[in-house]
Length: 335
Image (cartoon, rainbow, N blue to C red; front, side, top):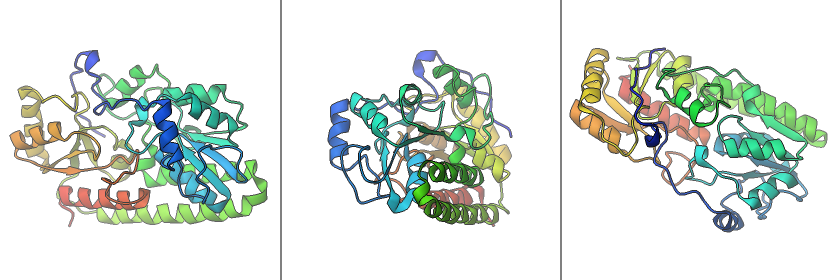
């Protein structure tokens, strides 16, 4: 796929990151967890710790992993997520309390290379069942290798992602492959409930298959195949459905684009019939709106689903993916 060349700004701008939020302290995490904010609804237990329950205790790194555990585990699992709603997953620093939660759990479900502090904690943890979803499907490089998000992400995190795009959950087909692997791992680790995990996995895979069908039919005939985003997160999705993502990954979310950059985007937008600049739900829309105004384009949200909050266009992964599809259909001029 084609991605625009981006001149990498000074390193201190951290160009691929969204607006950096303050890291949540251990005390804040403890308070939030006690209020039930860190525990999903895969079971009725809302205890503040992840371990020592009468269920299969699973610690997950961030929302896409938690959704898998919740859907596959059902009533037999107690799911805790390390990344609070609205918190930037890449910037997570695990607290002492969360480290203790991890050590007491029966399993950990994470995506190696996305969150360095999680990788370190998992490596040092005595947890027997460690499920790295990066091993359950194939990861690819997306974006410009000099200045794109994937390369910048890799440089920022010490090369653990191998320069590969971690956003596999935004492709329903790859996400279904991951779901099958997670279901098998749960069944092996908790054989007493293997039949339930198998049934739930099959149901989730079917649900993701239906989502894939919606995307295929919904994006089959469009006026243009190109879309612009402020964050290069949709490479797998674009590849799956024959689209091209043009990411503004080289710009800080809080900075205004240069006149030369706007001119380049303006030319590309006219040439490819682009109508919309997409930004994320939880990130400043300043860059997107500046580009849109100067290029006479519209703006809309395309959610990378790294977390669900009150501002999300849906209550779970499927609903937000369906909202993303509608946004893409509008922007691409689906017929």
